[in-house]
Length: 274
Ligand code: HEC
Image (cartoon, rainbow, N blue to C red; front, side, top):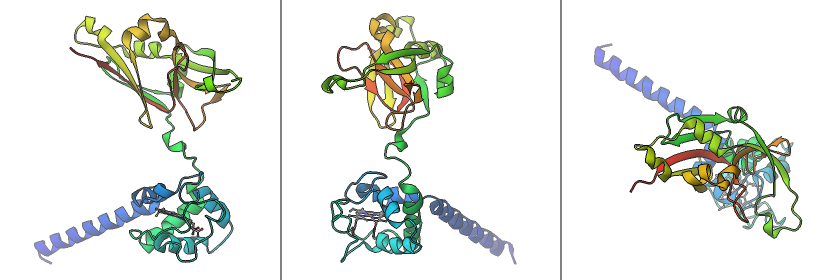
């Protein structure tokens, strides 16, 4: 074998390894296949959308040994002409699933197994859950705070009304535990070019679903509002559930319907320059 043939072989082996490697990555992840093939346009984990929820599908076929093969065919080819009857049961809004033409039979099987075993177990909200919050932007000390880290700040326990409770009848106050945004910002220490610019700083809080809330530095440090801006991680002694957890934020001294955020992801300090 001369050197160029050898190089050629090496190249072929490398390419082969890359193909096998990438195949394995895809094979491992039904979720990713579902994302790239648009399944979530019509299906959610636990609630009906255009198609039935994945948890309802898993329930219907539990214990059926042929389910994976059968469903993989439906996933690829759709359920026309007879349909599987989901709409008649009021669990879908279309009578059939159209063919998913980009799904290969192999990936169809991976998706079918994923639907049967995993897809319905996560709640729809679970993908937004955050377990830590980062403090970034114009600070001396950027931070990445887990719930354990938050517990190390001076803790506050307060009673608050459920958010948006104005319209509800007789809302029951909840006991929440958390820390002041002020204390977190003090640890990170806001850093601006001139000390005077601190007063022009804005604090932008972002949630994992893209929702944003803004505070000004004087509001947080020099007004009574600041004494009520809290990141909290416990309600009535329990960690926050998937629908808002694990870290939420409330500005409890606002008038009326206070600023509120679930799934807090980051706290960013920005100076509003002239
Ligand atoms: C355009 C909307 C739409 C898209 C996109 C879609 N589905 Fe469906 N799916 C449906 C509907 C509607 C049903 C109920 C069909 C019926 O009753 O015949 C269904 C049913 C199913 C079923 C149950 C079939 C049965 O016989 O019980 C599975 C499994 C399924 N879909 C998986 C998927 C996967 C995986 C994808 C992504 C590759 C996907 N679906 C994309 C609308 C859709």
